[in-house]
Structures are given as structure tokens and as C-alpha cells.
Image (tube, rainbow, N blue to C red; front, side):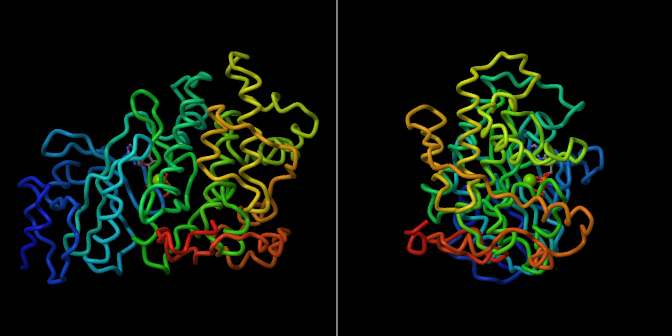
Length: 387
Ligand SMILES: Nc1ncnc2c1ncn2[C@@H]1O[C@H](COP(=O)(O)OP(=O)(O)OP(=O)(O)O)[C@@H](O)[C@H]1O
Ligand SMILES: [Mg+2]
């Protein structure tokens, strides 16, 4: 076994379980390595009682680490084709990122075939399970809490898009990736993970309808991944937070099933306030709520270049910048695409290209740099001037 003393500069004695291979991993300084044994102990042998969820990456367990900290322990199930160095290089980037609105990655385990991520544990679960979780929701989200969540998520995403190096496109902004701490401060999770799963196990293809409702058409259909695709997803999320409902609900009358369609119809009638969550009992600032919904519509404009940057979104939400909706048009909708996906869950997104009514050529007018969707979420600034 090879020793990696430089890996352990920030670590405790628990980290002295070395990855069992001989790869040269010099240059990776910031990753805390956990032994499999520590994580097994932390989760009571990955017991089902400690399982707190399961997404496309694999099961997530709640655990208590040796230092007493609670952690969310995500066991990546797709057998990673990556070597230790490649994996740790990605983790190294994510480990360095700190922001109030981003979930902190504590470290990882890379023993044998195991690829396990260890995150800060957030007490109040995700927006999907709380705000949008229907009868399971035990938290009341008043208007102030919603404002804080909208602004916090926008700040976290602006940080990923505009401040970290290399810049990061999240690729999967949605309610289940917005976690809440004990004060309902929102934290974006799962950023920077796309490279950690083999290209043939595309996370996107495991989605179900509803999740698809967050995808910008030019990304879902054309595979063009830019920050503007995240901004589209953020716009959908913003409308969800204000309205307290999921982006797609097939139990509603057909003209109300897709939240963006509904928002646009109400906007045209000057009735946007009708979309605000009735559980707020009119205890909200109508003008502010309608402004948030308009920002959601701006973020989901069909042409990526008409969507604002995340730093502009932050300013609009906080009132530092005016919301200019004078040239706003109908948001991009992929409802037909989603409808088909419900019926043919197993089929890949590529198969759906020909059946969508979305006009892919209309997306090609954007100036954004295109990034192969399954391949990467991180990129260097030199590719990014036009985004
Ligand atoms: N840091 C965390 N703190 C608390 N709970 C978490 C944490 N990370 C994940 N979870 C819980 O585990 C669940 C599964 O998370 P995971 O990210 O694997 O899947 P997902 O976000 O639901 O779906 P997808 O894989 O499509 O992103 C989350 O919905 C959340 O309830
Ligand atoms: Mg997630």
C-alpha cells in the first residue's frame, strides 16, 4: 500500500486508512479521506434505519462521525469507472467550496470500489419533502422564510456561476437539491457531481416526470449545457416556492398542470397574484410575490440569452435592480416532452428528440458556450466569456 501523507494534512487519525492503489495523487491537498470502517460505524453498518433518502446517485444515510458531527453519507451506487486520482481531483474542487448557501462536503471514502461522499447534515430536509411535500410537511413556510430561501438559493447559484474557479454549472437545480438547516437557511446540494458517475450512467436518464420540468429545453433536447440551463431551473424553482406547488401536477385541470404555463396565462391576465400559495392566507406582500414570479418567468425565457445572470437575479430579488418585463415572452415549455416521458420512463432523452414540439433551432441563437451535457459541469473561465 502507498502512503499519502499530504492527504492527511487536514485530517484526523480516522483518515489514515489509505486508498488501496498506487495512483499518483499529488496535487490533491484539501480532501479529507474517511475510512470505510468509520463510515460503517457512523451509520450502524449502513442500517436501513439510518437511511434518509435515495436519489439517482444511490442511498444517503444519516450518521454520526467520530468527532461527533452529524453527516449525510452518500454512497455512490454507479460503480465508478474513475480511478482514485480522477475521483479525488473532482472532490478536491468541491471540498474547497464554502458558501452559506451551499452544502459543505466534509470529505469522501475511496476504499476499494467504494465511492462515498460525506456532507454536512441538514436538519430540515429538502424543499421537495417539506414545502412541496404535501401532507408530510410539518414546517410552515411564511412569506419571510420563502424570501430568505429564494434569495439564498440565488446567492448560492450566483457564487457557483460567477465566483468559484473553475466555475460550476450545477445541472440539477430542483427542490430536492435545496436542503434546509435548522433556521431554514437554504443550502444547494449535489453541485459538481456530474463527473463522478460514469458517462454511460447518465443521471438525467433516471429522472421521472416532474424532475424533467426543471430542465431547460435546449439542454434536455439539444444537450446544450450552460449556466443558462441552471438559471432556467432556478426560475421554475422560484415559481414553485412562491406558489407552494410542484412544477407538474397531472391531477389539476389540463390548463393548470404545468406551473410555467399557468404562470404565463396569469401574467397575461395581470393576475399573477392568483398563483401565490393560498396556505399563506394572504399574509405576504403581493407586489413582491408578483415580482418574484416575474423573475421566474424571465429566468425561463425560451432564448437563453434573454435569461438574466444569477447575480442580476439576486439584485432583482433584493430590490437592487428593476425587473424589466417589457420584452418578456412566453417561457419555454417542454410539456409535450414531459408527457411522453411519463409514459416511457425507461427511454432515453435522446429518443425523445424527434417527438418534442420544442423548436430546437430557436435555442441556437444564444451566444452561450456549449458544454457536452453528460461530460462535465466544471469548466475554466477561458471557455466562458460569452456566457
Ligand atoms: N446533506 C444532507 N442533509 C440531510 N439530508 C440529506 C442530505 N443530502 C441528502 N439528503 C437527503 O437524502 C435524499 C436523497 O438525496 P439525493 O441527493 O441522493 O437524491 P435526490 O436529490 O432526492 O434526487 P437526485 O438524485 O435526482 O438528485 C434527499 O432528498 C434528502 O432528503
Ligand atoms: Mg440530491
